[in-house]
Length: 472
Image (cartoon, rainbow, N blue to C red; front, side, top):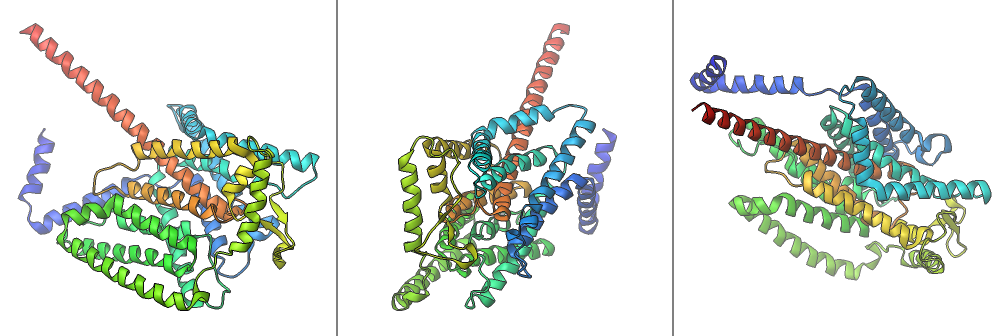
């Protein structure tokens, strides 16, 4: 009691400078006591950051297309997961690993079954049909999502893992956007298919804690302004892509930020309300002007390759209709030989420009149902535990919102592009989805523990009152 009184007294009697000094010391102490990254965490992150380097490809090495190196990021990240599991088995006295394994399996069971089905079907066709061009990459990387969930769930430094990944993605995202903006006309640089990775980073900076509750603090103001600039930068990336999928992801990201944060600020802050209406007016005027300009300059608009896409869609659709229940059980070829369109690097072997249609063609209604069911289960869990929180949010909650927006945007992108067949991009996409699942399960466990403690405390208080009454 005396210790508590002394602390309160010191804080109350101290002047403003001393109070700020004590607050800084408390924050520094909290930061120093936060769990640090373990070796297994570094290995896991190294694989993801290497995949980011692959897709950014600053030196045009195309490492994601070379046989010996294209799966290296996956191998490195899996090594981190294995080290984390060994450490958990050796040092975890509570032996909660089996509980965590069951939680992950229960939450993601439909996608686990789908991933295993794809892998088994691909291995079968490699062995018995002598076809190496299979969908095994799709299945393996889908299963990686649950390894990512595992390491986030069991690591004490889970918040640092997710933060480090998002900051790394933002750093390379800035590089990629600047590269596109300065060299897009030459078409030597095109990060199309990465819209779901780059644009939703705006969610992280829009929702991340920035000291808005203390506007008198200059340091907090600087942090707030920098986060506003980063938010606008990554939203602007949606225009730099100049692709239809980029525009769709931009609209999704704006809608997500509005639902998660901006609608509250619009009600609470007059200045925010003014600037919102101002920018909406500017965008409307700019949209009208742009529509008139592009109506005269049709060649500047993204075409979307409708002729080529419709040809590949037609092939996939006929496969689906020939066996709509279970398809080919993923024993077909991942790409088709087309004569109408030829790409020199692919030697005429072209993928269907829709991974969802490929899932339908190769696995029928059963595969589509597992795919949709898996997403809905994780969405429900995330909405209940990770995406519903008080404002202002903690950093990990902002990260969860960002990963959720990325996961939804990924569906938009791979609905019109062959993402799941590309190792580095698939690793990032499923890794983000897995980290969201890991955060959601961790928060679900925290909520369950809080309810258990609260129930135990209420029971103890009730027992104490009964004893006191008996003595009376």
